[in-house]
Length: 212
Image (cartoon, rainbow, N blue to C red; front, top):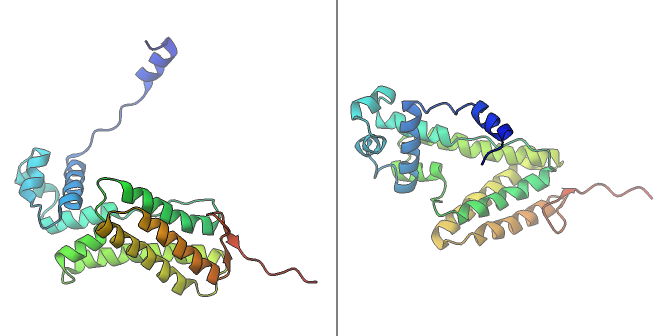
């Protein structure tokens, strides 16, 4: 039984706004495209899953290409701001990857998957994919710049290669430990760049020795 106070809070809590039809279509397309493949899923399948006609779907998305672009833009989520030390943020990326790899519905990077399925000739898809990958590289670069790394641009590129490589290895091997291996490699790169990562993720830039 709820107390009177709990009951009052329950009755006063606002209901979440209902999903719009466009949001329902996009959410369904997101799930089907990611889990089963963009080429394998037609608009008929998406419309049937939502419980609408193709005409209704096309009222919100004029073509399958428009729906694909919206799906990828929906997946284009910026990194959350953090007040943790920059090196800890960098290494935490690989911890996050390991958790994602362990999920039963993990199917790799949706942007790489889309380019692989549709080919480089699909310029709209490739443009979104490149923008996403570059945003991740720039995020690494900015954290490395905060650490005072001399060649932050090059090291950022190396770190995104570790991210993408671990994703590919996990897809082949179905082994979340690939993220841990990539994290250890990232530590080596950071140490070589003058960052003291210590024995865990709590890392700080190595300072200059005090004058004698």
